[in-house]
Image (cartoon, rainbow, N blue to C red):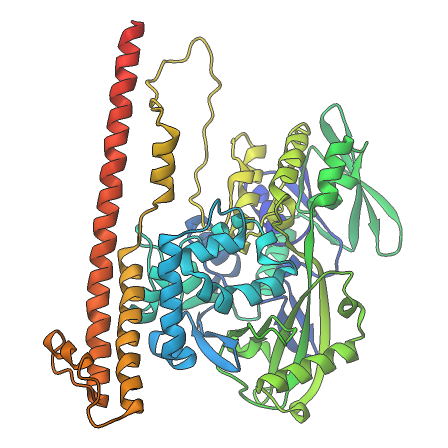
Length: 605
């Protein structure tokens, strides 16, 4: 029976062990901490249970949903999602709702957002190499600065133009201005295959006693099958020889060094730590690449409030720049059993930091004082309502997608491929900002690779479609299969097609409609406020085009509604016609290139 050593008892490590146990192998899990679950653990403080960030159990991967149900069984709750954004001392529903957003932003801001979106569609940013460019091209600069920039820079601690566009493409790729509008008007939206866009889901599963309950059950199931999860052992060295890892050396909490041998190794350690633990060390370029990987650290300040209900949300995003807090969780609204006393509430205030930041070393008392002050500043609680609190720190919580991360990852991955019996999985093991379900899927793939499958764990990423690739080496005996011919197209024609990307008819229609309606409304209102014996005779000519229009307050609202509808229709038609023209031109240049390629081929026969 093959022995497999797994470093880390988070979702990926325990899932790998669970899958291996079902495949008839012998897994052992080593965990540096005393709690299992990694960042998905649940911490208990005087009976108050809380997450390291909220963890929704929602997945589009059927295998992962089956695993969750298999491990936890009847202890899953179906919870409604309620979350808001706090910005400019106001709360906005998230997902956005049209009436709420308009009331919070006002008609002038809504007009500017529509104008900004239209500009981004006709004059998009260049190469989309960074997060800022990616978001502006899809939402417009105005909406980007309101609902993306401040919060994103709080989370990552670097300017948005230094964050790779990969992060946006991974985390919010199915969400667009159009889908946000549809969600605001019609509710949750779906992709073409019928899947709910995960950024907009309105309910999710959640363990009765928090996400750690899932991983405590998993550990217990493994123990019942005779497989150990050993806590308090931090792996410091992996000895390898001739392309295979032979053993791992760990240090216990008492300082004792222990050795573990195995046939296969699965690591969920942060890649930077893994590379430096290898004995002998990798080449200098691999070490340099590992040193360039960055991780965002995280701490949560938990406050116990003497109030039965503080706010109705599961969590609130804090976009206010003068508040250090990035997000606040209300654990009681995730599950009522997260608090031992129904007359109390527990709040988790999330701060995203670098370990070198001064706040990271602040005392618990000082951090709790900061949390109370900021909650009072937002208007959520009164300071005298807080009766207790605690702080939990989590290093290397989020792998950073800076501009050079992918090049560094490629260097590390190519080296790790030389170690035939070592696989890396999970968020930190792959330096991917994966959700829990995707981290679990990488672990399942790795476990099945040990019994002969050929899965690429590096290809698993958030919101992608998952396929197990069957790779057949090419050889002289392979059957020849016709391949699709790549047709050469001139650089100028290709640039035209790429530059004039397709416009979204609904989004352009809404933006143009809102701009038209607000402009006509403001033009009428300005004349009414100006006054005079005869008000706006020239503007009154609009009555020939808009039903019932006069330069009156009633007319102002009538022309705003009709102008918005007319602008919506006009914008929709402009986008459709423009897309048809670009598509037709693209079709013509492709057919021309194909014809030229055919002539060239005949000339060579």
